[in-house]
Image 1 (cartoon, rainbow, N blue to C red):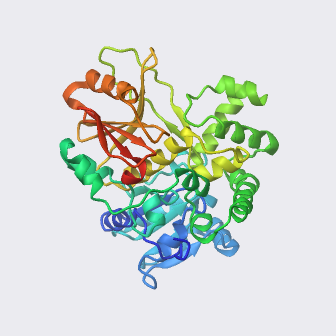
Image 2: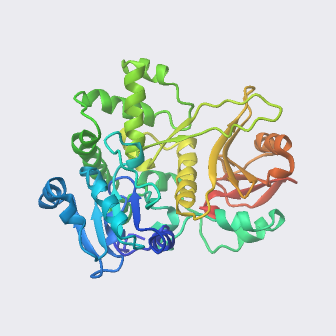
Length: 410
């Protein structure tokens, strides 16, 4: 894998990107810095699109002084890192309103522009949005795809064992994958943990000292970094902002605002609860995960990866798949007031696919209890429960729960 070139590996979102560009006048590709956005958009129709990066100070100055000149002309244009000059979006809107041509503008940003207070122009009705996440395991292997979620949804439940067994693959240590994360440079180009640690440290410093300051003026960077570390130590847990603030000696309103900034930067993920209630009282607070397990482990001080990191790996793959999909799917978790919990629920085409993650090589029937409870609650709407584990066997734990190795799916 490490002999590959991160700049030439195919990405999961490429088909969705091409489709959306063929329909809408503008496409906005957002995602965390260093996820590969610039590489992705520069590979698209080279020589036929004008490429301008706002990381270039001359281009940034032009965007702020005379945005109309930067977006003028009839040739398609790519504008990289537009969150550095949000006022540019007004000029893009005016240009589209004068002449509506599919694919005319391709914009990228390292922040979720829809969540940025400084951005008053959403290009509603004029733009499509696409998120590029760090690389999935299959992207890292050169396959340009995510896990087998689409195939599982399209295949009758009884045929899932044959579907997963037919995939040519070999076992992999999930802990190694968790430490590596998915950012192209440390994942593909760096062989040694020490090298990746240096990269992660530079990434965090750049985020704190530059990217974060473009979103909000934060002077207490040591406090912000402590909050980041505390969040990384709570992967897979319900978000309790008061408790989090108490642990890092910060008021709850500050914790709330800073978590929003982390989410706007795609570093933090909040997984909502699946809250459709039939007979059970449900917990509705979101759960906390991180956008990249490599960064999370680095910020946490390098502990051994645990079960929450395996959950995070699966969630990252699910989110990358969901956000590259043309038909929307919803993701959540399910938890009752009595403590029954299912890690992830995919809602697609009016059906529910419950997924449980176990960092164990030999799952037992008892591990399927909450999946079976979920299926009992939602009846025919629920598909067979899928329990992903760290072993090598595909087996039915119960008539309605299939256990499979995580690496057979991701």
